[in-house]
Image 1 (tube, rainbow over the protein chains, first blue to last red):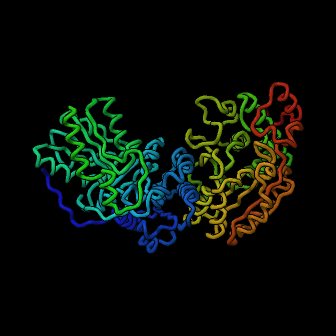
Image 2: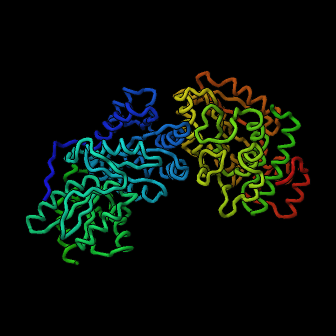
Image 3: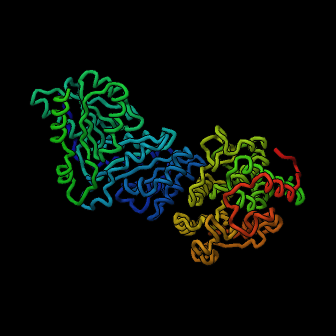
Length: 317
Length: 282
């Protein structure tokens, strides 16, 4: 199996901050807005370097989304920053009408997504945001897996005209994708070729999928691992080519089983090539307080859960 | 050259006819607020705003306008058409399938003159603040105008935006509130009394002007000219426009009944007879 090296744990939100810093230097139309979470979103550098292009909105997320939509009228490329919960559910109608339906070039950048926000508990741990955002016509939905990829995605979405939801998180996780790697929206990344089962993972679950593939290899099972950083538009071709070879699939995501990556993959499969699918996702519940590792274990969002799911998927072929 | 008062009056009457005929044709839409804001939008587009020829979304080096209370789309569409953004005859497609003139205004169908979708209330002021701040970044000294319903002020997002505007000194913005005192379910006092909007805006550190005769074109121009003179002084500007819902049609005035109801054939004939054709019907 192909080896990946963790060059040192880093948080994906810092990748966002680094990407935003770089964008600030190279694209003067990029502006940034934050709803009182500059430190959490790692937007300090952008604010320091470009105070005139930085907008502190205060604790008023609905206003932030509207202001971002307005800033596009005049040619700006606004990046909004707050927690995923306040970036989506709290402001759904503002995004729907003022951004998505109005086709405004707003980049909604959301940190602290999912259970790995940790101790703050379920009020802040949104597990429904991918579903909310992917249902909006014209919205691109991206969930990056590590620091390097989050930085690359942040830079890439500035060149994409249209609304984007960029989802990342709080904890330090393995950083294993190439530094300054190319990020192509909607193009899945083949991490490991295999023949027995396809594992399609997004966000923090991608690294877990690689560990799972190693464990499966020890059992003589060849797992294909695909990093689906873009949930919408979904790279259906890569998924279908893979299951044509493996005959079964596991989807893995830090999200509710309803409305997430797994359902998008299932829709693709039933329309083209129905094969057994197992879901590694939160089973329609809210989260709770705990450390990220404790929560990912309790809610079965780790490499062990992926191994179990892969074996089950294979058995259903 | 700007139209004279008589020309503005003639256009106002024609826009009224357009509104009535549009909502009658599809037996839906919102004539009450549209009729109440006819003089204002005619004055804004024909006298007050500095506009470029044609339409581009960014609106750089011209004044831009956002309609936050999108349900009064009939008056917005009629005034846009008569101001050259699209053919007047297209008003006949209002609310029909495949039309650019959706029930509520949208950019989605590419209708020139519209820069944001509105309809779900309370979002327009935030959008206007963004556009105003973009103008500042672009060193564009032109203004951003908005119009909001008074009932719309019950939406909480407005107060986020109102707080932000003064805190961040967004002083290239004139927000006008259509004070007709009515909303779908009754008077604003009955539904959710808002007290003094003047006192509230002043408490949020806005510069507030009142136009008591909000259906008088000359009073509107005078009041809005004064409002323009208050821009660029560190404070956002609010205009409280006292209007009569259903203005110009006697049986639609002094009631909230015509907020979202179309006239029948007989009522249309009566209403049109009170507003004789001036510039020609579409």
